[in-house]
Image 1 (cartoon, rainbow, N blue to C red):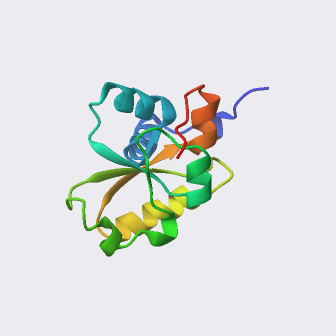
Image 2: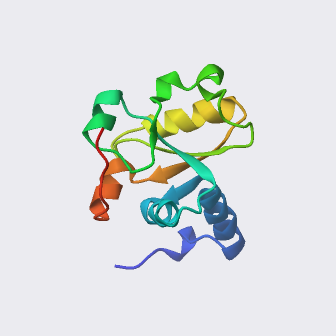
Image 3: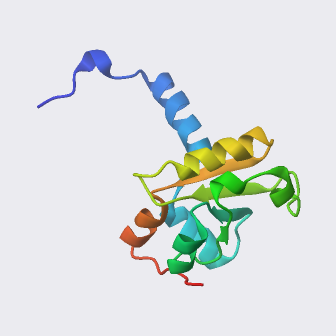
Length: 129
């Protein structure tokens, strides 16, 4: 099986696409490394419900369900705070909803692709509340 040449993007198109993607997403490994080293410049938001958060979440994450993201609940964060959001994983769009809510409020945001399932797939530990 081969890839059809007529649908392969030129290098500039690929650079534009994947560069934009990396500006919007990060992965579990990069979040883990940043959190482990303590040199992160973002707030990690678990945007699932409180019961799921209590059952297991990324260490250092703050629980703020995507439906509760509003200016009042963000008032304790500087306006230039960068947020990284995650939800259950590839089967869930809660992180996308959270990212939209944050962006509408003028906040910087990235999505941690893979969510909690990706975190577990990498073999990283969960914190429990």
